[in-house]
Image (cartoon, rainbow, N blue to C red; front, side, top):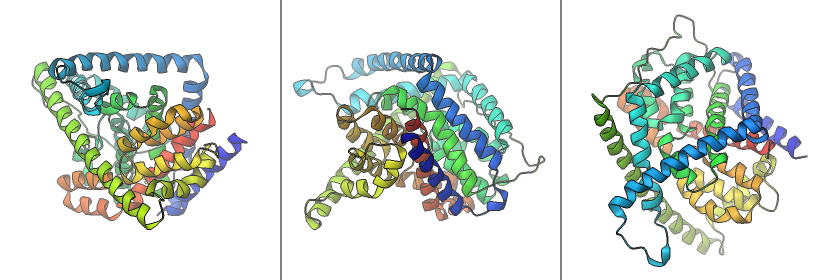
Length: 396
């Protein structure tokens, strides 16, 4: 029964994307099917095979080791700060680890290890799906770098991007997360679901965006001249640049959490007074409950899970993850997996401004276009998150 509901959910998600399409005649159905199969194989291998479990355990081990090493740096600087009752401080124990992860990414980029991986995975995806090389490269790049950084990496190609191609590029950026903050996510929610979400969301963003904004590019136009190289002149400069970038990200996330959590409490207070104790999250839970049931969330947990998913859309993934963390012990593994995969993306209202602002800095005219289809972008990215979560639910 759960598998049947999951198939219905996938059909509904793809159907909505199809109805939103601005060029149904040119939809690359072969590419969509190939990517759906790739998602099914990825999820099957990761959740149901010994090979997949070994991969997840290995990657989790690497991240946990990095978290341990990063914590040593945080403890050296802040270890003397006393915290009452043994409580943990999110900024110290989670956000500041972003600095170390950003440093690792910067060094790997300087050593040309990441550029090599991204280039050839992108070429492989382009080959098997028929998608243009720029879009494929950007989708892979978005797994490792933040939405702004991924877009900046293809700025030399912006003159070749039609509005539909611009939509796909923006959707990949919004549907991804940055590897520099994956360690922070793993500190909050189960690592196996966070890690599986990375490739699933990459494919989901491309699937949904390819349906909404299909592209056809001639062989002459389908070229990519992107050099994802470090601006650093030495290994230690790369470390310094990464640390500074990580520090900025940590402070930005902290500032956004303060603003969003405080604003959410304010909205809930107003909402509760107007609707007799009914909160905004509860309302969002009921709105998202129907699709949550189709995605595979048990009926007894779907309202609370829908509230978390809705919170992520109107605030950001960190706010939702922190709220969901307290629910994890009391809900089923299936709900934990589905909701965690859904949360592991940048699909929220604030990302519209981040992406539009980044594009505006590269090309003002295209920045206005991104602002114009901002809501369509958010809907598409949210559908992508739902598709990834449904895929995970099929195998849980």
